[in-house]
Amino acid sequence: MDEEIHERVRDTIKSIPRGRVATYGDIADLAKAPSPRLVGRILNEDGHDLPWQRVLKADGTCAPHLRDTQLQLLHEEGVPNLDGKVNLREYRWEDARKEEEQGLW
Image (tube, rainbow, N blue to C red):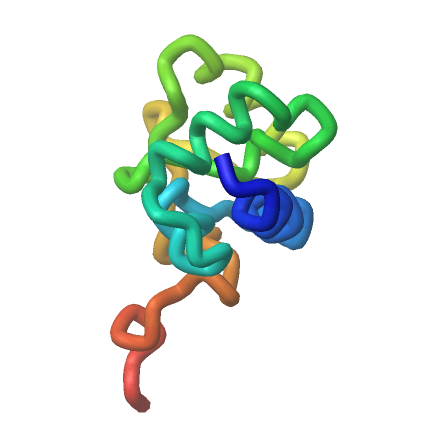
């Protein structure tokens, strides 16, 4: 794996503010990584010191094996969930919002 991409992904995840979330795809786009799967791999192998709980699947849900812990950590940051799903329209990190999602007006 390219060390520069690895560090860009880590730096991007570190930048997600408390009380905000981003998707694996958001992180890949912002870090110019080749895929959301690579973001997941980096988090799995080298994410213990990152705010990993702030990275969600594209539908606003958690990875099943992390769900309870991740939702609890997000709740402590003020990010609620409804039936295990975070409202991305409300809690998505502003830097991760695509232009069309932000609206033109």
